[in-house]
Structure formats: structure tokens, C-alpha cells
Image 1 (cartoon, one colour):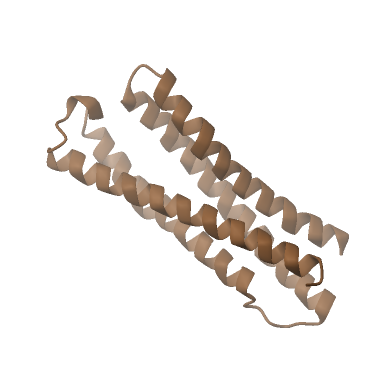
Image 2 (image 1 turned 90 degrees about the vertical axis):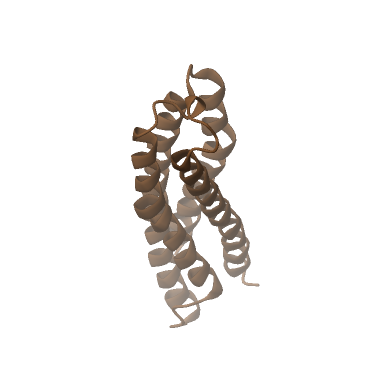
Length: 160
């Protein structure tokens, strides 16, 4: 049981810690120190891909260990506790970002030499900016849901 609790918590720590570090350190730093927005976008895009895969693996580890813990600890066979439902949503948002939004943004980015040299009214830039806004919303949603999952998991592990 201690191993299951450890893996549950570690998976959440890794995923949410990565999201927080990416959002508040990696992305702002890349855009402030690299010579062009295009280069910064490439660094951020590559980092986001790694973060998505970390999140996908962490989510699977959490779901597996949490369901097993629930079954062994409380004899519960309820596979869809609220924390599990939220984790499925987090995984879904990450998958959408990784396999729908990110590839579209990469295609659009490749068609622009540098986002600063393209007019803000250019249709390609408008579409890129809209996708970027959705990407940011999805990552923010994953983070907020993850914080709720941490709370629900702490509540479950404390017996409350």
C-alpha cells in the first residue's frame, strides 16, 4: 500500500510540477532570452511535447495505482471516483493539445518566417494566435483540474 500511495503522489507531482515549471519558467524565459520569437516558439513547442508525454504517462500511472489502491484499501470497485473522472478529462485535454492543436500550430509556424514579421491581421497569424489561445486554455485547465485531483487524493489518503 505505501508503494501505491507513493506512485499516486509521485505521478501527480511530476505532472503538475512540470506544468508549473513550463508555464512560469520555461515559456517566459524562452521568449525573453532567445533572439527571435520563432526560436522561442520552437523551444516552447518541443518542451510542450515532452510535457504532454510526461503527463500522459503520469496520468496512466495515477489512474492505475489509484484504482488499485481504492480496490485494496476500501474494497471499492468504483472505477469512476471523482478524481478518476477529472484525470480522464486531464488526459483528454492533453491528448487534444498534443495531437490536434500542436500539429496545426507547427504547420502554421512553418509557413511564417517569424511571427513578428507577419501582420497581426494576416489570416495565418490570426489562426495561429487562436490556436495558441486554445493551447493555453487547455494547459490551464489541466493545471486547475490537477490541483483539484491533488486535493481529492489527499482527502482519500487521509481517510476523509
